[in-house]
Length: 84
Image (cartoon, helix red, strand yellow):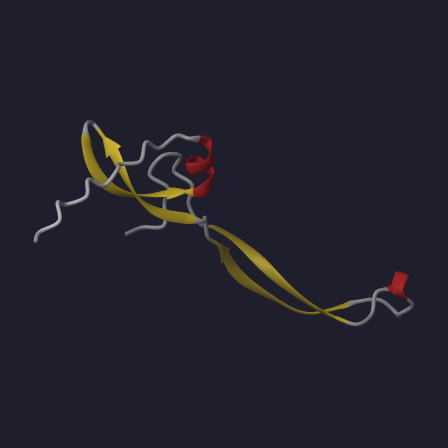
């Protein structure tokens, strides 16, 4: 499964991670120095959800922003009858 939201199409974006060392000037130090910059990916917070699509239940990957906004109608599980 790809890391893309089924509803809004949110996907991973590229960025950088900056490593710093030293005490900040406002805390009494000589300032922070950058000791390394590495590439990284910011991944969306995707959750696998059983949703109702076109009247049928389907498992889709949806970002939490769409879940909180109520853009997904969750499917309810029908409990199986207990067997004696």
